[in-house]
Length: 333
Ligand code: AMP
Ligand code: MN
Ligand code: MN
View 1 (cartoon, rainbow, N blue to C red):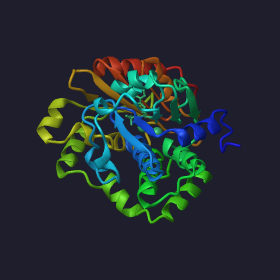
View 2: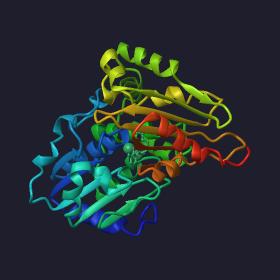
View 3: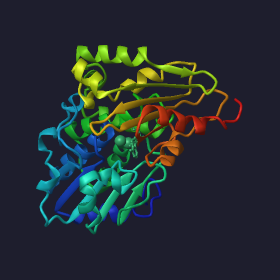
């Protein structure tokens, strides 16, 4: 009986047990959950004597600086290095196959393809699908799955999985952090996970120049009072002038959302190709139902969760207009 009552759970456990050469991929531009699930799974399956190829489908296949500490980071392989004779592909933290980027083709050609994820509306692109939309993180699902596969967790595997859980729950502050999540975190700590060290690496190790970038973001933040919407943006020029890497900007949205005067926050980040990556966040007030930013992101070709989502837009002005269209018809709170 599977922990989550997922139809494919037992077949997934058996398929992992029976595979020997396994490609594992998370979504492009991985966050802590994607990378934690990826490296945790890879280390765990290696501990069972299997050969693994952990990767993702965007360049470079190198963790962002804040996640470089993760055990197994040195074992990542570029996706073209995955051999043809693998007998399983595992996709992690991908709400849709396109989130695999350049690994999508290889993954969809594989049978079996295991899709482990927690995004609502996951399109079940695997031949086996373990989609648990109420799980805090993909790392949480992976932790329970690995136990059923017969993996003995250790310090390194637990560190990867804990990092996934702590990042996707916003350090256990969001509603996706269930009693089960906290019990799992406690269990992971018992393997010697250094939680304060992880917090330091992930949340408090930005270069000094990041503070200058944050200053720009906060200075140009705009509040649309009536719609309770706050947004800001960064350009490639900002990154160049401050010397901050594009892969060091994930926490900017947390500063923008920190006002009580808005319950939807957005940050727009200019990409190399001139388009903007949109990060959306939503908060639930004590009296009002939360705006589903996942719905907004899906309307514009992206995806995500109800309270955290993203997509790509051509420019800031039209993106703001597009988001506002979804905020005007909100019920009075
Ligand atoms: P982010 O704002 O980049 O931290 O992303 C928030 C959530 O939205 C995460 O769950 C992402 O997996 C998801 N997400 C972000 N960008 C996209 C996209 N272009 N397509 C689908 N999902 C996305
Ligand atoms: Mn993710
Ligand atoms: Mn996730």
